[in-house]
Image (cartoon, one colour):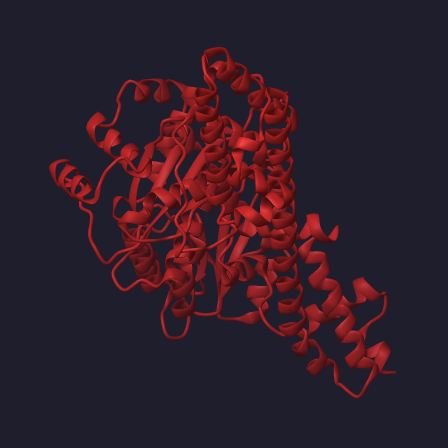
Length: 531
């Protein structure tokens, strides 16, 4: 459950954020702010379920902020901290829809207890909405079939431009030129071995529940939610007027993070999402393919996260796959299942030879097989010659493959080439992103280095970033930031820097809190080093 804290007194703000054991109770503080204006600016990016705020703040008071928040996100639960025992304040707060009203000085236990009560209310409401009986009822109430067929056809590149516009108008789906569109694909993760409530037979029902939750989390103004031919949940986002690419990426990240959190709270299961890049109407099928490719990478990075497509190549057009054989072969390659890929090749070649009554038909099949490999490679935006190395020569002269065994061996070598190139690309992409993280931390030790802030700057999901950093370095991101700050603070204190200036230089504006962290890390107070 996500919590945001807004308080203009820095000492109280730090106490609320750091002294209360939120994580022990399943609460994550995703953002803090010192005034209402700043809080409103970052609220949409973080989208907390619970907002704890002071009533008296500069620039925008707490009640005005609460009114603006509830107008944008009516489901947000708000807890007011007030120094006024005034019935008028409380009456107005209740009228606005504020959940709780606490009087200062409220102790840490009272604040924690109140937040946990509100969190339990949210969980209970979600449970009532999405219990199994309700999901079974909703299963029988399907969305209009014509609209779903159209959206599935659109992402599958089934329509020419004139057909797209004609059918969308007939189905009252407004498609506007000049806006960007981006596709995300979401699936319930494989069930854990210890799961007893559901079995593999329940997966269609669970996937349907994911689709219903996605429709509740995603406002109609943001785009459409539907299921594709494989039963996966597709979120087709549309940009807002005058919205930049970076702002759209932040909004998509926020919506997907909220969706995965609700699924976890409600179903007690995890789901993962893959995100494609944004483009115009014609680019939607490419964005869908990118999202599917990104989702397959959860086998590497784990479950319960949103994974962005690693390459952004708007000028290149990926080739869509429409064969069951092609789809299975591509999945086997990208998930590193060499045995399965080889078995698919064996079965295809056996079938080709069994049905071919002339050499011409054999080479028709061979031409098709080479086309499958080409599409798999080009869908990633890779140069075919570079991927295949010496075996590229066979693509230029397929007639040199003269036997069944030779064809099978060649095909399996091609699979090895593609898998090796894919692994190198993944390592290179991961290394560059981690290198960028390290450089950013070293450059901005005095600034906001929270994982959520860094993820927003890089337009990626914070959970994905955390797992990538841990995988590449063997150390958690928070531990790395603390180490760099404490090492830098020690260097400054051993020089001529004052304790207050050293604390500010490594991002601590509350000197007493800095001293506490420093002592815990080094076993000595900052003032001891000065002596």
